[in-house]
Image 1 (spheres, rainbow, N blue to C red):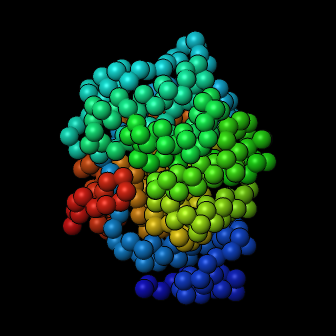
Image 2: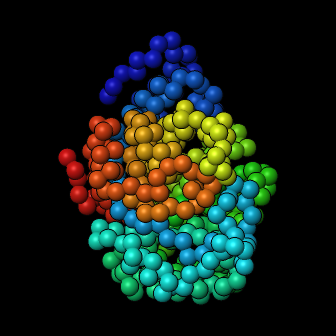
Image 3: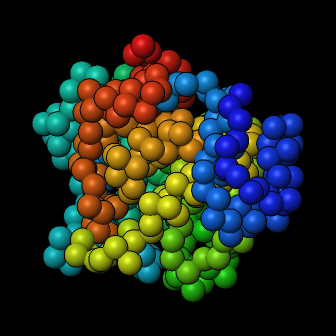
Length: 368
């Protein structure tokens, strides 16, 4: 294992270094200390050490497509610029047939996963959301359906009168294989009130994933950082995910999402710094010791910083995506997708081994 080279390490950091070397779990206080520290290289090297233990030099990606059946949404989250009201210019709700037509125009033979999220559109019944998945599953049976956030599942319970478990079972019958990680934002009810996150609360978000795990699903989870939350809020968020993982072992990956401004013209002072993005990825790797993968989401932090993050604890660079919309509607300046060849180049450029995977991290091809 590599040796830390940062000089003048203080006693508190030395204690954390010893914990990481020994495989001991870090505390809330440790996580907050790391956020308050300016010793980014030590934090990154510790995270890299943990990641190497779990994944060696392998970095994973998938060929996938992002799909959005509707942008009509009853929620008015302060950070979202994707949502529309019914009848507003630019609002849309696609039928299964319309989505199939879109997919047929853009899909290529390597796509293994549809990543499906959208608005909380109460103008259509729950059956619409079931039928949407069924249509895709019938037409593309070999493509895995990764669909809906925990907040969307909670919304479905309200418009259907069904329990979380019943909603999930209906969706599974239509082809659902796993949930996306969105809707977590920051797992603090105070934060959610201030940011007008008028959708699933903290316990509801966690309960949806708990029920999904009980049904045999392995799911994804996120953290949207960079607005009003404190460093302690971020670490508490990580700890709540870690606690649920201790209970269910159902999460495959944790995805820190860097908050995007609402305008592409926003200056750098309105965006998270590269320093903050790298520190958050590294601290996520150190705090969440029971989830195999930390994802660097190039849509939010850009390909170059994603490449650097592979030495700061990240082991996944997401996928090809093809026309991401939510972050770009909020001001992301990054590409809307990357090709397989670009992802392989990105990973190899960091001195890592690219591994093409399926949704569940089964290895499809290793690019030595």
